[in-house]
Amino acid sequence: MPEAAETPVTMDKIVSLCRRRGFVFPSSEIYGGLGSTYDYGHYGVLTKANIRSLWLRSMVQERDDIVALDSAVILNPRVWEASGHVSGFSDPLVDCRTCKLRFRADKLEDASCGRKPSRHPGETPDCDLTEPRQFNLMFKTQVGAMEDASSVAYLRPETAQGIFVNFKNVLQLARRKPPFGIAQVGKSFRNEITPGNFLFRMREFEQMEMEFFVPPDQAERWYRYWIEERLNWYLDLGLRESNLRVREHTPEERSHYSSGTSDIEYRYPIGWQELEGVANRGDFDLTQHTLHSGTKLEYVGPDGERYTPHVIEPAVSIDRILLAFLCDGYDEEVVGERERTVLRLHPKIAPVKAAVLPLIPRNEEMASRARNLFEELRRHHVVEHDDSGQIGRRYRRQDEIGTPWAFTIDEQTLEDDTVTVRDRDTLAQERLPISGVRAWLDEALERPWRSPKAG
Ligand code: ATP
Image (cartoon, rainbow, N blue to C red; front, side, top):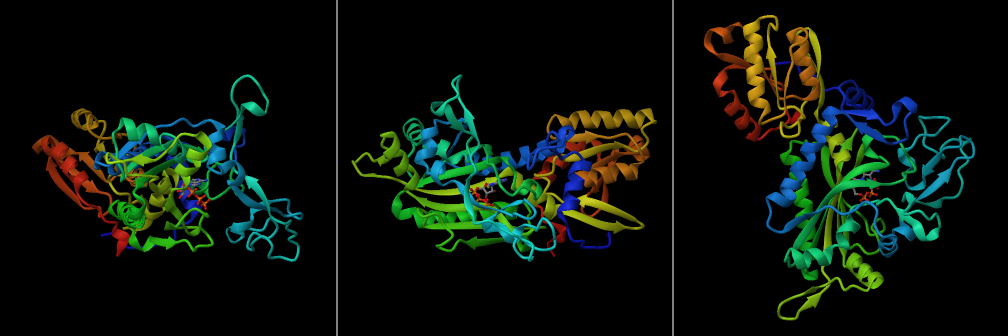
């Protein structure tokens, strides 16, 4: 077994790994980038796709009571008036007259002073902060050929409102009755004031939100249910329990319409921060859209009972989940004389499920056996074939992208049709018949997984 060496994970290490291995790049980098926007490379795309599909699977595929939706990014601007975003979706902003930087007045403890980065803004005698003023986070755009007030529209700052405005369609056409939910995944846009912290706070991010409509007297029960359900989703996917906690908002912190909000927080390298929010939004959204649109958004039962459902909302971004998995899985350890960096991701999250490696690529028989195995496996899973460089280097490359298993074709394969399977976490090696590799991998991917760092 390798020596255990728990090194603190810093955001710099995560950023550097993401770049080195092609998970994430700064956006439009050759032009100097653009604050808080990022481009996902090959492994980032694959990992995000896994997160998205596991979320949809648990929210939609495995349930009877939730349906999917994909609404537009640009909606009728009246949606955002009704929802309160035009007047109230803002953060308090302060400027420092000395260093000319801008900060969120409610997050000064997360920011660094422009002159003395070891201090927070406002903490040094030189800091000269203005009074806070409200800054609306919605990106404005124009729809159509006219550039006047009538053509103003917004890029959605959340996916939830697209769900509320489709409530009636789903209720009627999907023949649903509360309790039922509508789930949506898609890009949201916010002109965040405090850039930085990598994928944690982006100006363009991919949200996964589910609005669960319930009879008013069941709201509290479902609110508790969804906090539990979502926390377990992270635990089942191997995030360490010691890095997760639920923090209930105080009444002062919550929106005026909410009767309960809890954050599922993750211990990122920047400290405990909101990973996902679960809110009990009451009947605020459906009531607001009823008032503004003139369309009644309510449930009418077969025996004439009618009510405006209350809404429980679990909301998260794929980007914050990905960052949590990268931080939780990142590990450096010494194996023998060598150091290795390894991403201990749950196999279901890992971008590549297995690597197929011919030990001596020049050996034609080995090369062709490896190629055949790769062709067979790739029809079912994302797998990689790598025949360049020393075997140790190839293993380390796979460790860094979190590939859970590597199948190596060697001399013995040519004699007895077996391959070596190497486990990313334990480094244990065993031999398998080459004909059984596909079934072995299918089965291994279904096994529960626990982080070896969980203690
Ligand atoms: P914060 O207080 O951190 O700004 P918020 O409370 O405004 O977050 P919500 O409006 O509740 O966030 O958004 C729901 C979820 O969407 C968050 O829990 C987070 O996972 C994700 N999210 C929100 N803003 C961003 C962002 N700028 N970048 C990445 N993910 C985000």
